[in-house]
Amino acid sequence: MLSEHGPARLRVSSPAKGVAIMRVLRAELGIDLTSAKAVVRRVVNGDYSGTLPEMERVARKLRESGITAVATRP
Image 1 (tube, rainbow, N blue to C red):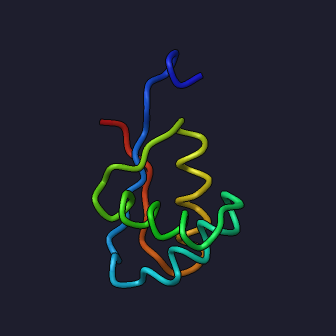
Image 2 (cartoon, rainbow, N blue to C red):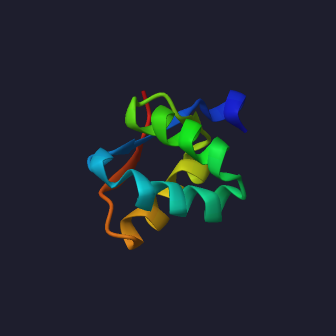
Image 3 (cartoon, rainbow, N blue to C red):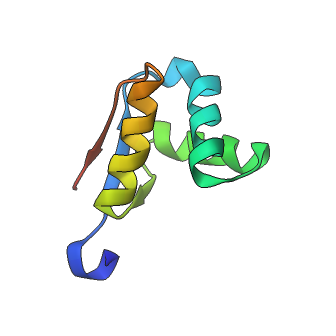
């Protein structure tokens, strides 16, 4: 799916809410705390990508937690 449709990136405009972002990522991705910290860094830097449906799902969960997030295509 990724090769067919291309990647999408997850962008957040509230990087100061790192703990809240980690909480959502841990729940949605099923990852441990160390991995969540690494993913938060990638998200804040604009380097976290996947398929558009995956990024939309995570962005929606972040918005539900009060974090401004959007999935974009490069």
